[in-house]
Length: 171
Image 1 (cartoon, rainbow, N blue to C red):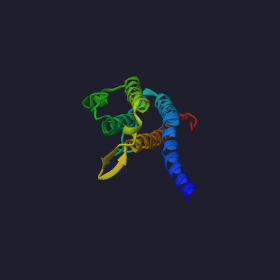
Image 2 (cartoon, helix red, strand yellow):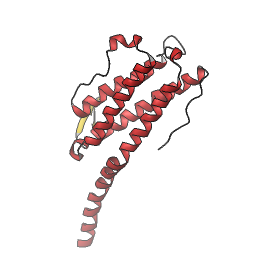
Image 3 (cartoon, rainbow, N blue to C red):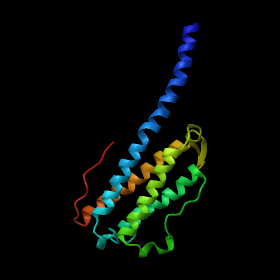
Image 4 (cartoon, rainbow, N blue to C red):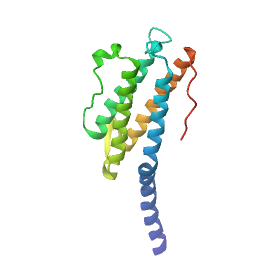
């Protein structure tokens, strides 16, 4: 009986530690690869097509990339408590390809810095997001998922504009 209790106690500590080890050792690399792929997609579109959109109600190609940045601003506030703005949204229509790529890279680097610096206790801290309780770690996964979604839309835009999309980059 004593051995069974010890086993359950050890397992109870092992799995959370293993999950934490995964985030600390693997997630920085996952984030870096994902953001490099997004930057490759952004660089593939010729500047003259940065205002391309498939229909009037859709975002432009550049707008998709800036939307990723806006989401980074919104979600990282939940992680760091800091309101970070990466560009003047009132001038978004005036931005060129190089400026948008710079802004996107800067925002993604900021997330990378938060990933590298977050403590275990902060990572596991429960926060409220859209009336749901989740950890800050979940917000990092949400940041990646949102970027993947809009990067996928950008790949469709590339193909619609007759531009070869960069090859897929996985884990």
